[in-house]
Length: 94
Image 1 (cartoon, helix red, strand yellow):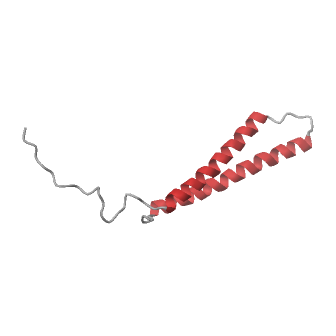
Image 2 (cartoon, rainbow, N blue to C red):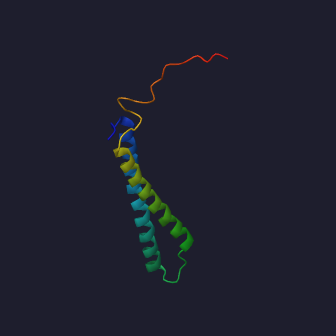
């Protein structure tokens, strides 16, 4: 495990918001389709637009879950014996 920093916390919060908004988009789209069908049984449902809204909602929900899972691992660049420390520079004689 790597240490969790402030940036990881912000990204986890963003992921949670993304997940919740994805579920809300899917719920409201399906609920709107049901209401439209009940109001006007012969009306047009705009299947392409509704399918795109559901797809966007599902992608948001999955992306939010991945944001949270990825940021729970912490910051992999923050290590105690980091290999990113500058090494001794050698002069090349040309």
